[in-house]
Every structure is written in structure tokens, then in C-alpha cells.
Length: 93
Image 1 (cartoon, one colour):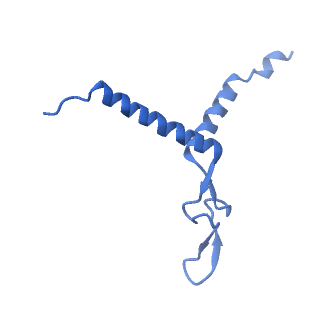
Image 2: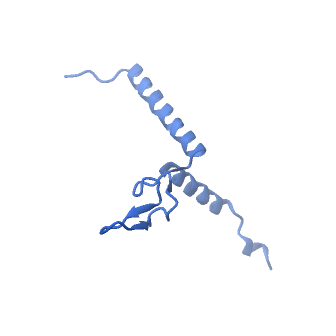
Image 3: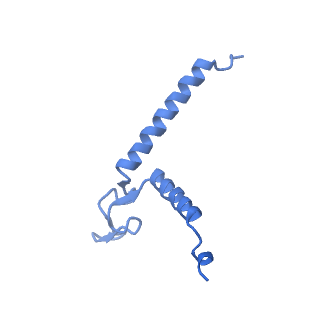
């Protein structure tokens, strides 16, 4: 049987996890957009038959997509904003 992880191992794991999470958060703040996975950032796709090109529908031909972390951040900020906004109907008579 193996021994349970020591407190030092748990602390090192938590430090690594915090470092990776912080790095990803800074990445989402600095560069919120990444390349589109379907068109690889070009904005267009090859047609299934022939040599024609068509525009990528996933990224609307921009070649960019919003990162998951940024999408979660935007959603949480929208919830916070909607939850703390005063109700304007109650103030009026």
C-alpha cells in the first residue's frame, strides 16, 4: 500500500495549480481571443467538393474565437451587473 500524500506534496500541488490558474487568467485578460479551431484562423474553409472556398460560420469569418476563461469572466460580470443594478420601476410614481 502506498502512503497518503504528505502536507508538503499537497502544498506543492496547490501552488502549481494556483500558478497555472493565475497564468491562464492573465492570458484571458491580455489576449481574450484565440484562433478559430475550425478554420485555423484563416476565416474561410474549403468547400466539400471542388476548389471553392466558403466563409467559416463558427467564427463569422473573423478567424478568432473568445477563450473559455474570458467567456466565463464575461458571464460572471454580467450576472453581477444584473444582480446589483437598482430596480428603476420602484423609484417612479
